[in-house]
Length: 86
Image (cartoon, rainbow, N blue to C red; front, side):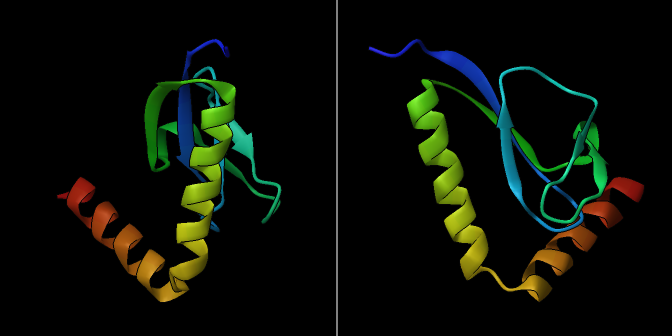
C-alpha cells in the first residue's frame, strides 16, 4: 500500500504545462517553455493521495490540456486576471 500525502498540482501560466509537488514552492522553472513562474499566481489545486494516484491525476489534466486549444486557454486566463484586477 502506498502512503497518502497532500500533493499540490499547479500549471505554468506561460505555456499551460502541469506539475505536482508535495510542498508549496515560491517559483518553478518550466521545462517546456524554459521560463520561471510563481506558484502563488498559477492555477492550482491540492489532493490527498498516493504518488501513483498523483501521477495519474497529472496524466489526466495533461490529456485535457492537449484537447484544449490555445485560444481557449488564453481567453480563460485573461478572464481570471480581469476579475482579480477588479
